[in-house]
Amino acid sequence: MLCQAMQVINAIDTAGLIVTENDGVIVHANERARELLGRDVPTGSCIHRVCPEVSDILASSGLERACEFTIFPQGPDDTTDGAPSARHLRVSSRPLCLHDGVPRDYVMLTFEDIAVQSTLAERIKFLSSVLDRAAGGITIIDPDLRIVYVNQAQANMHQYSVGELVGKSIDVFCDPDEIHRLQESIFATGEHEGIWTGEAVNYAKDGTAIPVLLSVSMLRDAVGKLSAIVGVTKDIHKYKELEQDMRSYSDNLARLVSLRTRELESSRDELETMFDAVSDFMFVVDDSYCITRANRFTASFFHRKRREIVGRKCYSLWGDGIEPCRGCPAHKVFGSGTTSFASRIVKEERVHVWAYPMRSVSQVADTPTLSGVLCYGKIMTAELAMEERIQQAEKMASLGQLSAGLAHELRNPLGIILAANCAVKTRVRSDDNEVHKALDTIERNVDRATGIVANLLDFSRKGTTSVATASIADLVGQVLTLEEDLLRRQRIAVSVDLDCLPPVTANSDGMRQVLFNVIHNAVQAMPDGGRLTISGRAAPSGIRLTIADTGIGIDPGELPRVFDPFFTTKAPGQGTGLGLAICYREIERHRGSISMSSRPGQGSEVTIELPLGNSAASPGSDDWRQTPSE
Image (cartoon, rainbow, N blue to C red):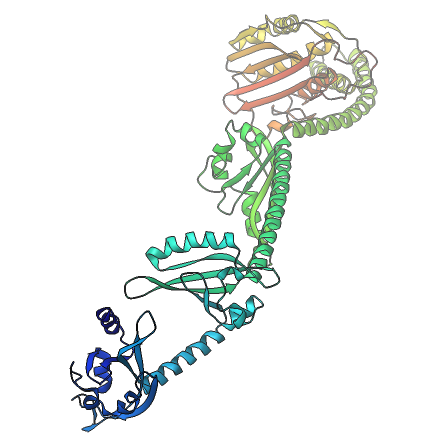
């Protein structure tokens, strides 16, 4: 048993321990006793010689005594500037007892350095003060989960005093189930890392739940045995409330964003639907002239898919060029920032394009900036053609009224001149050739003037003639018979292809006059020979007749005026300029259309379109000026 006691004494390194017999013979001394005394303490020597300062407390056998004394160590290292340093020690004696409590023949002396103990006490006091001032709660528990220390912050957090917590089980402010869960997590982690951090729930004295952030450290002794557990807690209920508020705010914001996104998607879909519903060109270009959006009509017009258009330069699509088109309205918008207009021919269609600036407000500056150009285009070919027909019809009507007045005013003077010429001719001698020649010239020019008056009357007459079923092929044949000698003299080859033409409802005399004027003009355009081609085909709503020649052609600048009254490209005296005007008027009365195309030096082509059935005006109708329905 004494040997076991000696082993325990050697393990203690905080105090000096010496065991003596009752007569003062040293039985054992640990290393710390030798350090404190600064002297050799041999076993078997007398304690009174080694340390005479303890003689007084050993005099009372069987009693516990204590005293303080100052000793000057004898070791070589225990000096200060060559003089031995004093050491203040406290010594206490205690008789050794066995299990029965009866004192034996041994006394244990305990030596403590008063300065060291004072320093330790100050440090403990300082650390305790620091821990009590810590903002977070600090708790130290033993391996049995009993509280051995708790700072003031931890006690205040749970509405206890420090005294109410020390010595209590940790379940005083932890739920047993929570303790079990934490034990599994803490010990599982602590075995390897020595520290665990996580969230837990503590309870105040009144039962209020307190969410905390808990950090746990495992303290072990020299042999690795668990000696204590230190827990540091921080009240996070405000953070939890803030987290809940943020979660609610986030959920609400997500709901609002989702709702707004659906609204924007719905608006976008509506705009896309409206965008695609427009049966005209609509597209958007950026400042590099790339198409960023285009509607369905734009894609279909160019026979492409929409994805093939988006990202492409607009001028490569509209003009097959490598730079912006001349007069580009989008280019003008980027330069001026205002709406612009342009008109151009695209795939033989006349298109009017309006360009509008698109502005957006950035997050950096409140000033709107030009972000793109919206282009709206409309095919105006039919509308412009209709407008030209209306203008032509109005002009023809005005000229018709003028022509009618002139014809009536000229007919009587011409008749008087012709009668006077005949009277003079009967009174002139038959052998006066010069006079007869002059009178013949007068008569010939009066006849010519009378023909012009007749043409004026034809041009101005109202649509009062009857209509009936007529064969265009037969009418063309009659006109070619009249022109047969002239065609032969001018060596003009004729090609006719009218076998598939159905009959039309028309005024035969009027249509015969139209065909004669057109064919005669074609023959006159080929004085040195050529080819006259007359062809026709049925259309869904009528027939289309084409009369083409290989003559001298017409200058492009004069082509728009060929149907104007009194306009002619022939030499003076060879035409009145009323032939094609009469044709235009007559075809208009039949609710049809007539047009001409020509290339100088290559020939001209006249196209006549007539409706089938009863589309022509009936006898007595004053509605001859109505243009064909588009």
